[in-house]
Length: 194
Image (cartoon, rainbow, N blue to C red; front, side, top):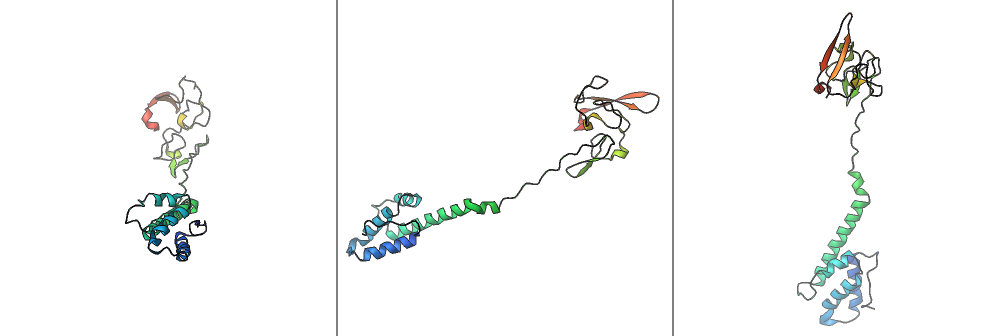
C-alpha cells in the first residue's frame, strides 16, 4: 500500500507528506525510512510542474532530504497557485481604461467654433488661438466648395476642385477675400494649417 500511494488533486503538499509519513510508520523501514519516503514522495506526487521541479534535484546527493523536497514542493505549489489566481482575475483589478480622446467636431457653414481635445478651435480657419467672430479669414471664400465663411481645411463638403483649379490639399492655399470692390489673393503657408 505504501509504495502505491499517490497524492490526490485535493491534497496540498503538506497533507501529502503527512499522509505518506502515516503510511510509512506502519511499515517498519528502520534506517531506510528517510530514503524510501523521499522516493515515494517524488514518484507519488504525480506528473506535473511540481514533480518536474523535484526531479531536477540530484537524488544521490546527501543534501537532498525529504524535508528539503517538501520545502521545494511547497514553494512550487504556492507559485503555481499564485500564478493561477493572478491570471484568473486579479489582473483585471489593475486594468485601467485609457482616456477617450474627444473627436473633432466640424463646424457648420455658419462658422461656429469646434472643439479639439477640450480646446476651442476657430470654425473658419481651424486655429486654436482665437474665436470664429474675430477670425481675419471669416470673409474669405473656401477653395474647396466656393462658399464664403470658411477656409478649405475646415470645409464640410467632399474635397473637389475649386473654381481656381486648386485642390483643397495643396501645400499653398490661395484664397480670395470678398471685401467690396476689389479682390486680393493671399498665399497662406502650409505650416499655418498644422
